[in-house]
Length: 404
Image 1 (cartoon, rainbow, N blue to C red):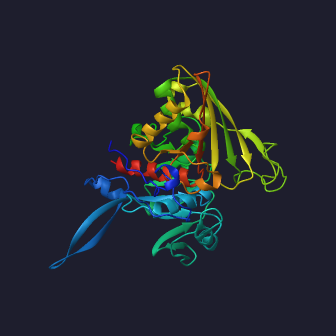
Image 2 (tube, helix red, strand yellow):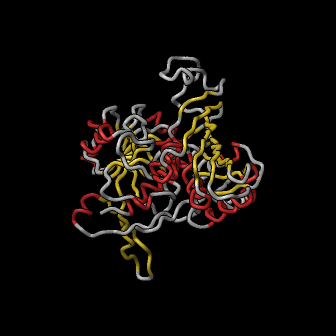
Image 3 (cartoon, helix red, strand yellow):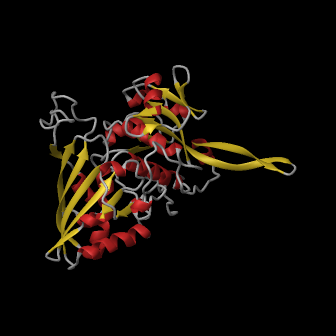
């Protein structure tokens, strides 16, 4: 499998040169996207949209490079759906071509919420509705359809190759499989999958992706933060067991004011409370790092902030160590195999400083602790929307790069 070249934010002097940028809504990617090996079989032609550009020469024009792009549909245009579109739009030479959005709110609302975002700021693109069934983004028209039942979506007629499943509803094989029945060829779930759905975390186990996988999961935002630095800890020091707490910004699953919810704590007003609740993120690490099965568990504390979260991990390790050695291991990995995924911050920052950070996790080096030489505490920040959506784009790129 070809190696992934990931999008990395423009470094900030405050951030040790890794993964930080000044908050500006959408930033242009400073790195190239995944390379995409084209095939020439008839089957490949039948599922790929080809685009040809003209290149100027001394004698006029010649045929430019032909780029093969997977036809992509976004199902659910909420927080992750819109973040995904912004992230994709910011990458040059993407192997993906987003041509459809399924959203039940209508074109006017979808267009407005894409352009104006309370967390991301104003989208630096020309966004406007096109009739009753389209959105134009810098002149590219994306068709908007509306159905709550994936079986009714026109994926076959549109030749959709990959569906980005962003509703949080169709997360098992039966539900996500409805996109396949509707004519799509593959589904990428932007949430933890249920059942036997293969789970991939970029930087941890995404190299194991197989084109034979029809439905895959990108895990959760918290697992994407936790797994990379847990992998480093386990490889360098050996994890015996541990617990995790994610102090997590509130999400759309909570209530603005007290109202009914299956989780009695999430039923309470999100903007007024610290809400303890469950998370499967720690256990889910074992899906991408099987050697850690049964060794990690955790909880979530939902807090009154709209975005950016922080993981607090405490583990017992087999190799005796100290805080500086632990941080050195993170720095080494951030410079090498986890470049663009893991970052280390030496500045005394707060949550808002990590908005629109491209990396999956940023270790706060000043908060790393070691007790009795074998109990390690690590704090890592993550943008649970933007950073996660960057990984969704990365995983979709990997799907494209391995297309057969």
